[in-house]
Image 1 (cartoon, rainbow, N blue to C red):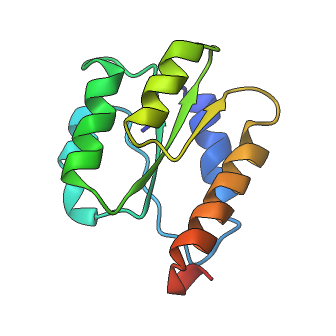
Image 2: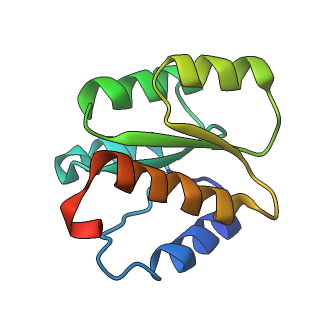
Length: 121
């Protein structure tokens, strides 16, 4: 779920380099919730979405989709929030900058290796 269209397009472009990935982009929590039936392995979640408190979104995702690993992204460095997200089960936290896609790639690679997701290994 990503509210920044430029960053969202960059993530989509990057994910297209993985032909075995099936991916969806949701610009709101409501659109994401209505698609929980997809049961994703990995969720990239921006902490600047409108609506619920960000920690509530993460807890909702972890409760409803326990198999999914959540990579949080943010435009700012909020150390207390980062610590809270990690305690609540986020797999990683990435600051949006010029290296974000490389960090997202590393996080996804780590998830695939740790979980031994057969279709992506």
